[in-house]
Length: 435
Image (cartoon, rainbow, N blue to C red; front, side, top):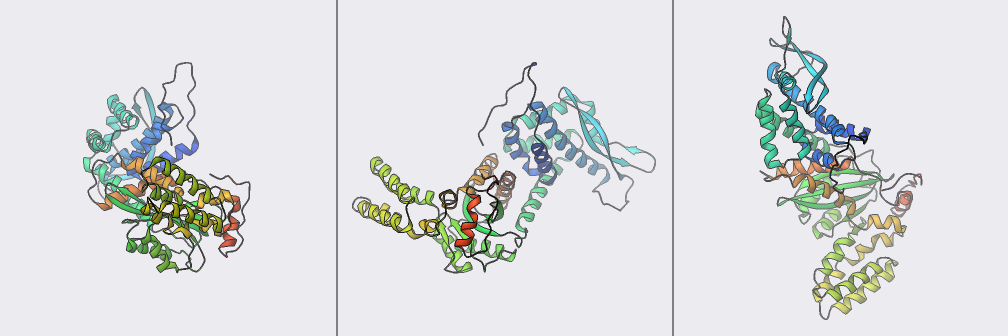
């Protein structure tokens, strides 16, 4: 996503209306995944809407979460059906607070004791002090870094009657729950034709991710594991977990990997040596070119490799071997890298897929794009306490990216992949939109 600076609207201009799906995304982010507040700041910076409209939606859901926390400070956790303690939860009601220069409508909890209504400290402070509303606006608009965010949010909570630790604990608990839900997703009902496996490094912590594509071209985040793609045991554990959650190992599935030998070994051990594997061509080209210092030779080799991938499996591999033979005199490491795993870089050619479908299935770009969202989220964190924290933040980024997943290119030709894999014909409507 390209970053755009929000422009101030003039008095004559009409603000754009915030899209419904953006409002829903905002509500879901705050309600279900508190710690996803930081990636939401990316949405604030990038959304094509007036800043006031966007802030109203963001601030409303944010403030409503703070009001719930404040109510918990007075009445304790909400337990449906139980009436314990002097102060009880009594549903919700409309309310208004001052946010910057406007009044903001919110849904606030109701509390009662035996005689009357009980006030919620945060609500009373936000109604009375405009500067607190301005502070919320500043937090949402400026996109503070995690280093400052960890300080700003507890201070905000403390100023309106909430224990400072409550905010942090609530966000951590919500993100941990989101990660657990991800790792418990059942896969029996997903007709997965392809699975992408690739790794991402988050503050020196390696995370292996799996994304699947079903017979209708939809992408699904399948799971995450702590550890590098170069670790065969980590990859094996992740694959076995997918099987335990319902992935059918008895039907052929195309695996697209970054070229790691450990990944290839894990796939063979779990799914058998006949499991079709496509090595990422982007990784292959990069690995070869990194071993060629001469710019002219590098450019020529790159052109030859890209051209060879457009040929049939037999002709393409012959052209690659010829190039490797030519490179071997001056750049033997580059020649060896080009030949290593060569056959598996032509798996999609061997399956005789259409060019549009081949382009999507010959690289790990499908999983690399969510990695970009993860990096945008995690770069705000200045210090990771442990690998579990890195995994939690990575899951937050992936789950946020998943909301924008679109169908793969060549979706109308996926029935050819199913046929090539020996699966039932899963032809889809050619008019369906592809990414």
